[in-house]
Every structure is written in C-alpha cells, then in structure tokens.
Length: 187
Ligand SMILES: CC(C)(COP(=O)(O)OP(=O)(O)OC[C@H]1O[C@@H](n2cnc3c(N)ncnc32)[C@H](O)[C@@H]1OP(=O)(O)O)[C@@H](O)C(=O)NCCC(=O)NCCS
Image 1 (tube, rainbow, N blue to C red):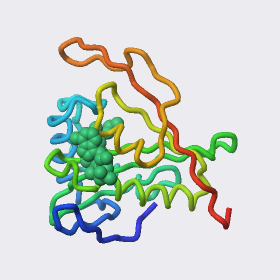
Image 2 (image 1 turned 180 degrees about the horizontal axis):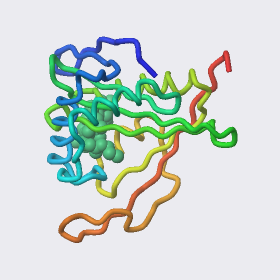
Image 3 (image 1 turned 90 degrees about the vertical axis):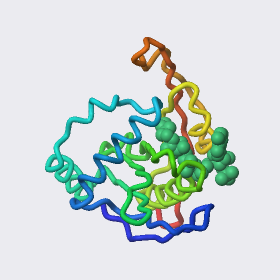
Image 4 (image 1 turned 120 degrees about the vertical axis):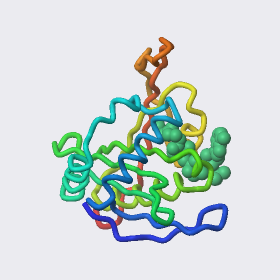
C-alpha cells in the first residue's frame, strides 16, 4: 500500500519527508538496516544476518508496496533514510481488527520526533483500515522505545521470558504492548 508524501519538521528545524520506499531505495535501505543493526542490540537481526542483495531488497520493497497486508513508511532526510516503520495487517476475519507495528531509526536521528510522526501516520492508516488494536513487542531495557510507545497510548499486556539471546549470551525478555484505537466514523 502506497502512502501520500508528508513533509514534517524535525525538532532541530530540519525538514524530512515521510513516504513509501521505492525500488530505487534498495541500496540505501540495506545500508540503513545494517547501520541500525550496528547501532543498537534492540532489533531482532544481527548485522551479518542481512544477507539480501540489492535486487532482492528492491523486490521486497515492491512486494510490500503492492501488498494488502503490509505497509512500509520511511522518513527521508535529504537522500538518506533516517527511519522506517512497518505495519502488518491480518487477513483472517477473527483477527482483522489487529495489526502489528515496528520501527527503527538511524541513531543520529533519535530524539527528533521522527518516531512520534511515523506512528501518527501509521495510526491514521490503521484506523482507515478498520483496525482497532495495534500491537508490538520490545526488548527488555529499551527505555527509549518504551517511552515512545507509552506516549502513543500503548500498555504492556504480557512478556515472553528470555525471548532473545545476545551474542555475549545475555538473555532478554520481550514485552508485548497493545494500543486500542478509536473507531473511525466511517467504519
Ligand atoms: C525507539 C525509537 C524508534 C524512538 O524514536 P524517536 O524518533 O527517537 O522518538 P521521539 O523523538 O518521537 O520521542 C518519543 C518520546 O520518547 C521520549 N524520549 C526521548 N528521548 C528519550 C530517552 N533518551 N529516554 C527515554 N525516553 C526518551 C520522549 O518522551 C519523547 O516524547 P516527546 O518528544 O513528546 O518528549 C528510536 O529511538 C530507535 O529507532 N531506536 C533504535 C531501534 C529500536 O529500538 N526500535 C524499536 C524496537 S522495539
């Protein structure tokens, strides 16, 4: 699903563009994903587990944009991808009211309001699709992510003990959160 472009102003005064990624973003997207994996241990993949070629990444972006069950938004600052945010919908009628959201930003763009802006856009899309409950998970210790999620209305509902094992052997729980959305007047 494609997003209409939206210009935003970051907390440091720079402007940025929220938009759907296109196939031409493939090389920059792979560089972005590897930077994120390098800069934080709070994501599920290790850097060496990003083995996709540029062609495969381009195909993944095209597939996501054409998909009815997935939607991706990037935040571009100039030619650089600062962050991405993904929404995954469910097809089955009994779980169609739920969707999962995930987000990551390059470290130099943390704390500038991008996470808040991307979540607001994704909330609108989810509501327009009739979703009434957004869900996500975060790794134990990720205070910055938790702060964003709580600010946006998420609350912890459960946890998965020892869901992640880091390279040094540390085991970390995963916390699950949900956020109830208002039903849009049209739905
Ligand atoms: C988690 C992440 C997406 C947050 O995005 P962000 O753009 O930095 O968040 P925002 O700037 O919109 O800040 C959201 C809120 O977090 C809080 N916050 C900011 N800095 C914080 C810090 N150092 N510690 C705790 N909370 C903080 C503030 O309350 C802020 O709200 P405010 O702007 O109204 O004051 C981003 O830091 C990131 O990509 N981290 C690495 C990858 C990751 O952890 N992804 C999530 C995996 S579950």
